[in-house]
Amino acid sequence: MAESRSIWFATAHLQFTNNIILTNPEPFAQEGFSVHPMNPGIGDKVVRSLVDGRADYCNVLGMPIIRAVEGLPLKFIASFQNTGWELWTRPNIERLEDLEGKTIGRTSPFPRERLDSALLEQGVDPASVAEGPFVQLDAAGIQEVVDGVVDGALLMAPISSMAREAGLVSPYDLNLSGDSVAYGIMTTDWMLAENRDEVKRFLRALLRSTADLKQNRELARSLVEQQFVPDRYIDQALDATLPYLNESGELAIESQQRWIDISRRLLGLETPVALDQVFDFSILQELAAEAAD
Image (cartoon, rainbow, N blue to C red; front, side):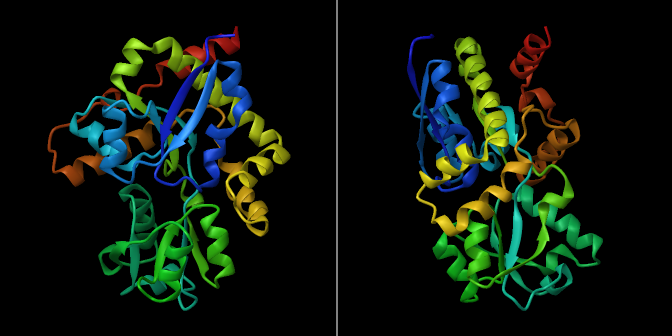
């Protein structure tokens, strides 16, 4: 077995069910790793943890992709959950049309773009749905929706289970709109250049973990329990997560281009940005070729 090494991944949301992909110990141990989560904060704090070398990888994508489009040496190397966001609102909002004139919590621009597209399809001007303050993706954030600080928020398991229990409703499921690139793996160009074999072993373990969890619900359940998620939420959280795990790690070119285009608009960049400035699936392709031999 390869020499053991501690791997740190940065995440803004330690409680999200999809973290079990990385906290499933056996596949990573087989490749010589002990994987540990860290929460440096949100947005650029995640980016800084990678650049400073405190984290080897991150599994949040919004700001790291924006900064990669801007030119920071970061790469998206695998997607392990292509979708998963759901809109949860106060009970008086039963349809997307009811969002007109309402406010939702500030969120990543990428799921918000998917929501805006769905609003347009229903004849609602996305500009009429204001973006309010950032809503913590936890029980406190749910309470802010209940209290009317905002009228809704984009949530992910297990927070969506808490929202249901609190009496909120879900008028739109972003899972219906294709890849919104919920969660994946990003790292630095330095890691890819200097530690390529290690990154390859890490991604091999990631793919094995994803496949194991999709096939073994009891294993997945035990890992969610270790996140201290109340038992009454666990099965709902698994139902909202396991079907959307991505065993290939790949991401459609259309989705890659959409993320770049959104980032360019946010940054005010007029010049094109090549896909390979942000996305590098070469190691995944090597692993797929090895599996096919």
